[in-house]
Length: 98
Image (cartoon, rainbow, N blue to C red; front, top):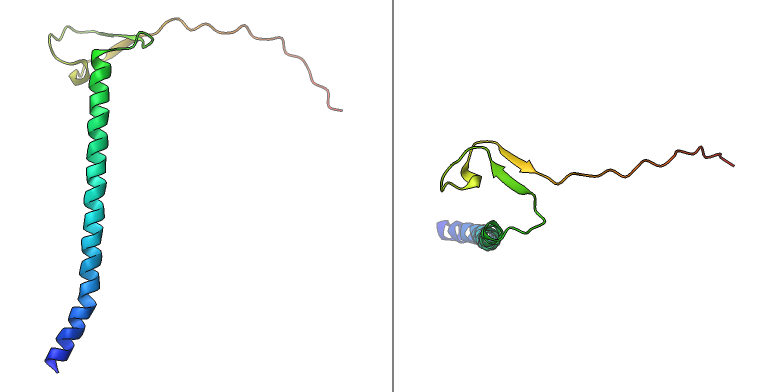
């Protein structure tokens, strides 16, 4: 009788174990994809850091920090944006409902 119950237990546990393994494989694959995506993002950030596009606003640090990166600084950063020009407001007209 024990051999029969052990076989039933094995048949019940096997799908659970296979599901768990499948979940772990999916999680591992998702983490690998996330890691690859983060590496690409990091490369993009490094490239932008070295090649700042001219249309980005100029950033000035308020404290001379030597060779320390601006991103590591805890000091506030001032961003100088070009002057924003507002469009002149149009004359308001009343709209009559028909």
